[in-house]
Image (tube, rainbow, N blue to C red; front, side, top):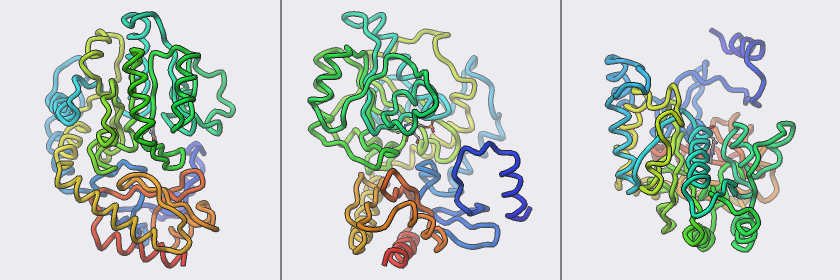
Length: 390
Ligand SMILES: Cc1ncc(COP(=O)(O)O)c(C=O)c1O
């Protein structure tokens, strides 16, 4: 089909919930996407952090294909190999205890809330069930996760919200102490680098301070690694650079490397909280998705993570040297480019016209390139940045 016909179909039949850029993806390889006319685009988005191994990675395709030829789905009422293997890998990467699989980050966080609330309602030192998140956070689009999301722009029109959610200020331990004293929470949830909120990294002191409050008061610490996880920040999970030991870690996006996955990893203390029938997900632990994810997680070894850190340094140096760039925030290959005079909302479409896919986050340009991006692809992307901002 021609690009114009596809756009017409989309406009006529797909619910208009996304502000789409004027570009028709057709096929891609690593960090390069081609449109219907064969025009090349360097990808600094990885499908919002999903395509951790870039487009059409051969090893990932092989792993997915092999499973497809065995069977595609059979339900969680029976055992299957890929999900069990993936759970073992995630437990080994974190030193935690058990995994629940779903299909999205939102569902991973919902599951974390259910585990924390059941623990708080039935097993904590006293009954408690409120949850504290941070202002400027993002935790998903379901009613509970959008309530936990601490940005009012996501709240408009969708009330009434789920009860029992309260907010504290990021990087302000006093604000967290106050919220804890007032609301007696069963859990605190936070992202180590707030992605949608503007690629804002939390201070180590704050993160460790929250850990201490949680330890002292038997509060479940949930770290949302949906966007920052899966090697993106240069460690397997971002929290691993912060010297903390969360009780629950939600994951999604890059773990699947392109197929829908999400879930939560829990520590030993919480591993027996949920009983059969108390949580489920029809597609969760899907064998095709998990086979691809096993391959992706295996690729994310120490050498791979060292490469991510090197690529991050290169991009931060190159982009940081552009006059119009005020600062680059975030960690590893999760970057927020703050501009001096131009607006990110104006620059991103210009970058696209010139052959570079990028994102925005509040007032910044947000970059989440595939972790496998090559030097040549990075150079091409930097050259486009220089041309547009120069
Ligand atoms: C930190 C964080 N948590 C949760 C979500 C929600 O994930 P999903 O869209 O897979 O439900 C996102 C999505 O961008 C995210 O960045």
